[in-house]
Length: 381
Image (tube, rainbow, N blue to C red):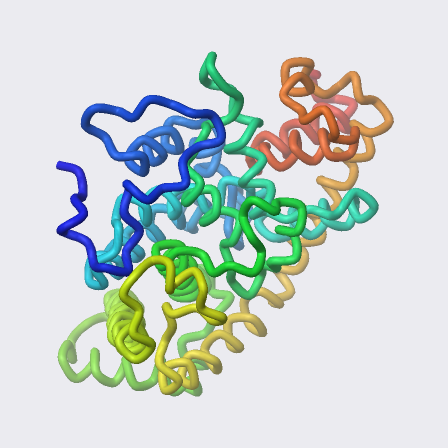
């Protein structure tokens, strides 16, 4: 059953106020615009490739660690929980959540960093804008139009995805998305759900890999508080179960705080329509100042001990080297790029942008195999 206007809060994004699609289509008889967007995203090649694109650990490090696909599903689950509690449009939330990482490169943020460097004279590389390129014209699945022809609200959610890794400056080339206008509450929820997911699940992966120490985490107040609560409730839990319980408790704490504080802000600023959401100077989906204060040491700990860990940095540099050499090879030998891929390009795109589109769409596994085929003399091409 579709979400109806009466089931949504007054500040939620209703399907009937959608700004539509780039190419006009007849509405579906029993699926809302955002349900159709979700389905198109799930059936896209870019979504399937997320299974073999990594977060922190390269794919051959082990099959326990999060990939972009499992991370995406976790973000969707957390975001829908928050959205339901706030009376928001869960269908729109799900579509944005499932699409928010479609523009990511192989090898996590290392891939984005090196492509940004290689495309410096071309405007750089930004995974949010790349996600928009994917859904706007790189995916070819319909005879009536190029791309997935998603609704304006989902496209905005992809392009304005904002975390500590993202910059809104890349939106300058997309005036229809209005760089100064706030995204919908649904998009704001996905952004925070993304932070909750990668903070807590990187903790899990970091502890499992041995790169993070449970003993060192005892210095972090938020971890210490939650661990004490769990040990009091489950005194006989072994270390593995204890880890899961503490992380689950941390997620629950952050989701609960976010819902309560966001409701407080919506009431405080008398937000009673989606128009008022768009016109705000600041976002309305936020953690309380008290929880933000507790979160900072934990996030700093992750940055210093996981993302800057010697082993992770070695993987990062190796990944950048793979992508740089692939890029330069294609630039000097453009005939090696698949012909059908070149046909998908925007007429204004340079050769470098076409190469970036091709590489960004690769999985970790495909990129590694391609590297071996091109540079290993004993590997069959």
